[in-house]
Structure formats: structure tokens, C-alpha cells
Amino acid sequence: MSFAASAFQSLRTSSSSFSSRAFVRSSAPTRLTRCSQLTRRHYSDIPADAASATPEQKKEDHQAKTDDKCSATAEKLKAKEAEVVDLTSRLRYLQADFLNLQRNAAREKEQTKDFAITRFALDLLETVDVLAIALKTVPEAALKPPTSLESTESSSTPLPKSHHAYLQDLHTGVEMTHRLLLQTLFKYHVKPFDPTGDKFDPNHHEALYQAPIPGKEPGTVIDCQKIGYKIKDRVLRAAQVGVAQDTS
Image 1 (cartoon, helix red, strand yellow):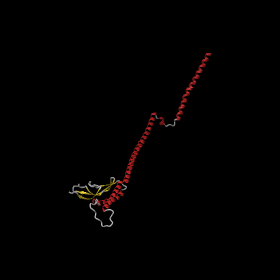
Image 2 (cartoon, one colour):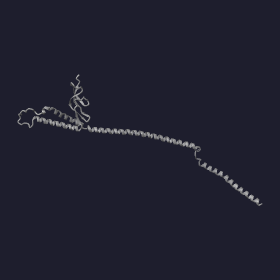
Image 3 (cartoon, helix red, strand yellow):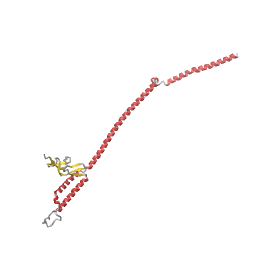
Image 4 (cartoon, one colour):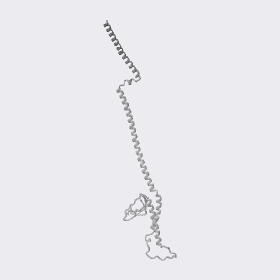
């Protein structure tokens, strides 16, 4: 009797433990089902296309968007590079024009400074011409001392100097004036030139007459009535000359 009771007690204990395990096992799927439902409710707002898209499609979409952005950025960079090239070329042209303007302004300023006395020099030339003519009116023979005794003058008050002495003083004074005027002109870069014997040049000479001269090449300057003048390399006044003519 005691053996049967102990066996019955063991069977009851095992059945109770078995039923508790079965209850635990049966309750686990229920919990998983509830968790899955909660998860579905939480992500139910995601679009169906996005939810159904595979990782590869998502990667391709992301790559396509990245390529579009890169292409747009590359186009903008090309446009900016073209703009930089255009602005650089314009800047270089403007810089070259500015340098040319500076050089031209400096050259014009220098020319204005050099030729500012043109009118003044032109007015002085007539005075120089008059003095040159006065010097030519006195022949060289009259400047030499007389070889014979001068006749006694009838005047009661003789001159302190002889006519020859006065003539020499006049010539000396005119010559000094002429030389001083030329030195003044030299100071301002005004220089005379005598083209006698040179080939006639219409840019530097003014032909007053032509004459057939044997032994002279036609077109050669044979006489200079008025010498010419230059300011540096520019002709201030052309020389007035006579030109040899062809004798044939």
C-alpha cells in the first residue's frame, strides 16, 4: 500500500511539471505574435514601394542621386572656369591698353616739352636772318686796313676813329649778336643746316629757282638763300635753295 501511494505521488508531480512547461511553451508564440503586430503598427506609415524595395534598389537610387548632384556640380564648375578665363583675358587686354596709354601719354608729354618753343624760335629766325644779311653787306676787302694814306678830311672836327675802324666795330657787334642768337637757339635744340651740295629733299628744302649748271648733277642744291633750321629731328623751317637743272 505504501508503494502504490508513492508511485501515485510521483506520477502527479511529473504531470504538473509537464503541464507548466506546456503552458510556457504555448504562451511564447502568443507573445511573439503580439510583438510582431506592434512592430507592424509602428512602421505602418512607410510607403509600400519603399518598404518593398530591396537594398540593391535603394543603393542604385542613392547612386543615381549622387551622380546627378556630381554632374550638376561639374557643370557649374565648367561655367565658372569659362567665366574666369573670359575675365582673365579681358583683364589682360585692359592692362595692355593701359600700358599703351601710359607710353603714348609719356611720349606726347615729352614731345610737347621739346616743341613748346616752336613759335618762339620761329620768331627769332627773322632776326637771325637780318643779322646774317647785315654781315654779308660788308665785303671782306673793306675789313682789311687800307694800304695807302687816307686823304685829309676837310672837316674841322675829325672823327675819333677812322671809317675803317667804325666798320670793323659794326661788323664785330653784328657778328657777336648773330653768334649769341645761335647759341640761344642751340640751348633749345634749334640747329641750322646748310644743304648746299646735297641732293634736293622736298621734306627739308624749298626750291626757289632752278638753273642749268654744267658739271652739276640735276637735282643738286647749288645755292642756299636761307639756311634751314631743325628742332631735334623735326624741321622747323625748310632751307630756301636753288637747284641744278638738267642741261639736256
